[in-house]
Length: 289
Image (spheres, rainbow, N blue to C red):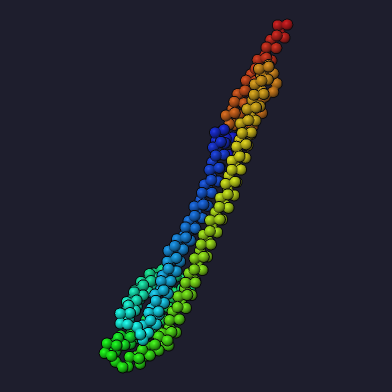
């Protein structure tokens, strides 16, 4: 179907519909990018930030246990302070195990799964050695109560457990936690940068399409105003003025079949009819003369 065969209202609707399509495309692109950005941010919130939080909680817990282990080996520590260290053990392990349970349920990549498995193996070994440490420490508590002369020997054995048996397992699990924490921090930076990049891309695309849509609206408006409305009406007015002056020589050039084209056709028929009447009148005058 040719554009010239369309009615004026259809042409106007066509112009508005074109602009509406461009606006819809802009909205769809915005929605798709917003959805992608939302997924990235959701992954950041649901996985990376909690992961770092629970990993830090674990490290704080094992560090607190290590500090309490060193404190409890002090020979001059009074019984009340020794009891406080046992309480610190319980509180620290409660935090550690809670963090482990929460982190266990978070989605992980291959690097995390491998290092997490290594951490759990090392943690169970370190926890077992800690229980050995606590058992030996409680033997010392009994020795203190009984004024056992071998208390210093027991303390020395306890210090050996702390300095030698617990040292390497502690650094092993601490190293695994550091790797996991650094990995999650790096991923959080990558995901946040990706989200910001997607937002910037969306802004650029939206600006470009908005400018294009605005330009298209102006071009369509000018074209419709000039070619569909102003030009045909101007030609129609010129012919009407000629008719008012009695000039029936020129007719309107019909380029469209819209409402203005139909009016122009009627005007042309009127001119033709008037010319025929004038010609017929002239012929009659010649006959009379």
